[in-house]
Image (cartoon, rainbow, N blue to C red; front, side):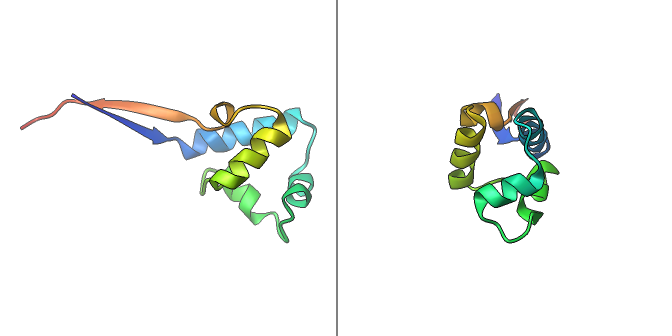
Amino acid sequence: MNTLHFINTVATGQNIDKLRISAGMSVRDMQTEFGFSTPQAIYKWIHGTTMPTVDNLVILAAMFEVTIDDIVVVDVVTKTRTW
């Protein structure tokens, strides 16, 4: 059996959005905190289209006072080999 771990980008994006809302922040507030010229990257994270870089995950964790593990959702799939 093989166990595969992968990041669930959609669930991770949902976590980022929940944390943002719980912190009372708008996407525009986050844009300002990150110094982004547009909010597009944040919307891509929230929709699960892309993942924040490791540097940005560290900033998000500090911003929301959580760990990176509280942000990133890792799914596990077990596959049986069929040879």
